[in-house]
Length: 405
Ligand SMILES: [Zn+2]
Image 1: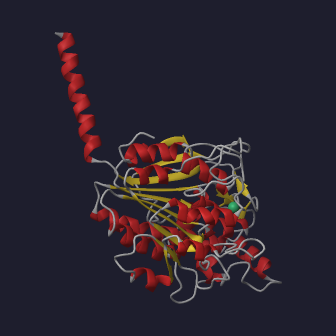
Image 2: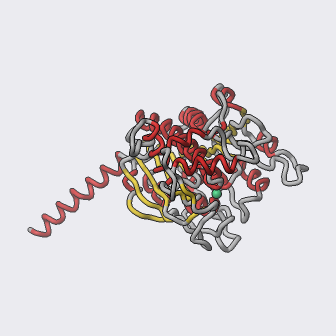
Image 3: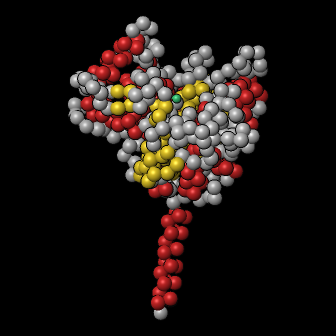
């Protein structure tokens, strides 16, 4: 009798699990990476928004109210403090590598396969995007393999070979190679079946017949990233514009789903510069880009998974510093441009005094090895809780989509 009861119980449990799995497979998957975005970058931005609203405390960002959160370890194969390409390799391929290497194992020979290729094999449409150059480390780990993240030309050559459907972001770094004497990457990509568009209008008006596109959003080909949020003028493109165009393009062409990786790449650069005002504006940009995905999720709640995390923390930010903070976090608004844009002589001094007034401290101009947060909502989001390693991210993505890793 006891055995029969146990069997009935087991069947009931298994059926319940099967039902839960089959009805909530992730078909539309978003992976947002805030480059260098530690929990302190998120907390700072939340505190800044609260202060601006006249409150002491914390306002939610689009993603910080997600129901599932966790912590992710980021160390690389040879260093407790990772770089973007080693961390990117981990959350793209599921394996650790050494700093500066890009989707290649520590033996320098074995190529590691990104989750984007695995999902493409399952019929997903693939979109890779960033507000920095499309052959920079974080977007590159999803389509290229190289022993050096700075081999921009060789990495760029692998973009069209991926056959992925949408690339969006800043144009190619070293478009004609280091010596500027090689065939243009843009030209090669075009010759191999990709449409190339420039700006928001061209991509949004693209013909329905175009199957693969590289959409550049930088204003000026001489600078291969979108403008820093703090420097942006008028209608210059931002990360949310890219994600909007990316969803529109992929949704119109998919039947089995899509995978979108979108990077807020300038958070890291502002934090390297110990520029709190610039950092906050970049995190807000990421939050707005995630909101575009949330709007999509609300239309497809049972089939959409949104994950927001980071590759590492940059700057060692603290939300208190000796003798600082008297003017509140919103005093960051007193800064009118990024450190590099402000007057060359005084930019550093202006930024430092604003950091002090706001009470924001930095402990390094580099990366740190502290765990980064992860936020998730939607189908399979419950997998992204607790403390886990960055190599688990692609494994969890495949599981959420109902596939073996
Ligand atoms: Zn960095």
